[in-house]
Image 1: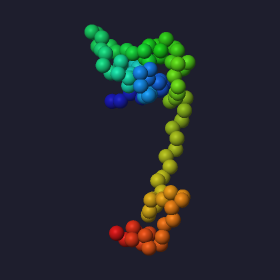
Image 2: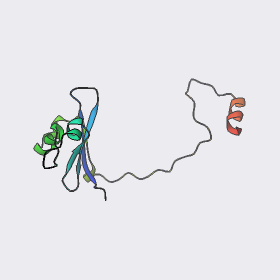
Image 3: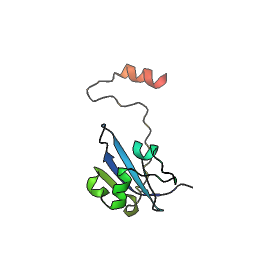
Image 4: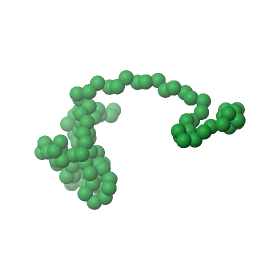
Length: 106
C-alpha cells in the first residue's frame, strides 16, 4: 500500500542545474530524490541527506525554492479531455484546406 504525500519541497542542486524533491508522508517518514539520499544508507538501514535534515530541523521552508502542502488543499476536479480531429498548428502557420482533407482521411 502506498503512503499519502503530505508536503513536497523543491531544493536546487548545489553542483548542477537540477532540482530535487523532498517528500514528507502521512506516517511522518521523509524521502528525497537527490543522490545523497539515494546512495547513502546507514548501518541501521536509515537514510538522510541535507534536504531531509532541513525538513527535520524545520528550516526547509526557508531554504527551498518551492513547496506544496497537500494536507491543506482539496483535490482539483477532473476536467474531461476534449478530443480534436487535428493537432493545432502554430499561429503563424496557415493550414490549407487540401492539407486538412489529406490528414483527416489518411
